[in-house]
Image 1: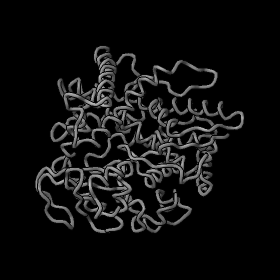
Image 2 (image 1 turned 180 degrees about the horizontal axis):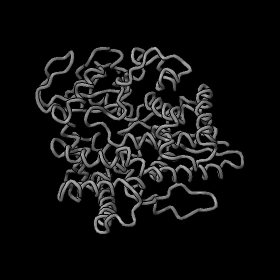
Image 3 (image 1 turned 90 degrees about the horizontal axis):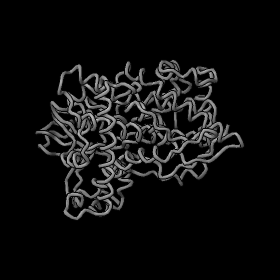
Image 4 (image 1 turned 90 degrees about the vertical axis):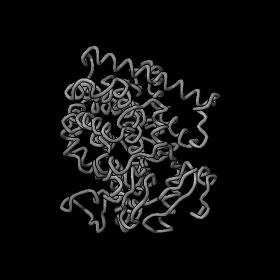
Length: 469
């Protein structure tokens, strides 16, 4: 469909690839912004870097998340930094920033390294007899959920069965599914905001399922938080929850309510595992294709040299500073396949936007970051996976003429940039290094058969990859 065809029916029919539809319209129209009237609202759609920068830099004072999104989040009883605004957001940000600053990330890193080593042992055992095929969408979700569970709650939640050490994983997978279904519930409410059946006296079976899941999720997290509050963090590994409780105590009594601590831990557990898992999937998708064999060889050489063939050498300092190609690979995967392709914002009052002039209070702006990732005026040869675009000039093997990272915002931008981005980066670097050091990846289907699906974040519907030693 063209922009002229935009109706509620057209958008809903394309909802699982809405980001691609908007991206295409941005390219076809090639204007700073265009107005879109559908889904019961009129919004401005833009991929203009200056406009996107202006909007994100003026948060939280000038712009906020759309009110309907906040009402959807509140309906799921998630009261935290994601939906906080104004002074409440400033309080949350101060505490969560401490929980995810680099000293805290270094303190959390042993949790990451332990999961990575378990993944390595699992893959070695499974690949010993000639390799195995795995759906990376599921595998990477398990990896990042294990990491985020340890780093968010200070608790172990093994989801990856190891050969020779098989445990009963059913209960762990049940707990993980409580978090997975929260994403599903939010997406369902976004799609059906015009007809909020979950607010009716006769909710649909799916609404009942989501409500039951949220009851179980809150009961579980409530128990974890209460135990940490009562025991003074005793028994917890270093984690975001203990950092948040400690920072909250330093801020003074009452700075965070019990419900707000629950809301923030649920938010970080969901966002922290989903985005990183999908980015790792897209990295694997690119590296599993013959066209990127040389790139994967460069990453492997770096990992083997720095780690000396032993994951015992994988420390926070190594992941943070000594694996630049692995970090570049993560950033390039995020550029080519943005997992958070668009964000929506609403003006708190009349606001000035570059090239557009004044817009009225309540104006919604949809920022389509995906679009610029494939623009030659933003990135040289945008269809190629090029590590060198993220390296300093002296370290490049290939010259990159055009590189505008500010044109894409994989973690958002401005004061409300994602506080967990440092943890996501070191986690992804650690997994990429372990993967490249020891394993070959081969796509087990044609590249065009890997379907990209929008479900709050962008993930492959299924990603079959063969893994060999």
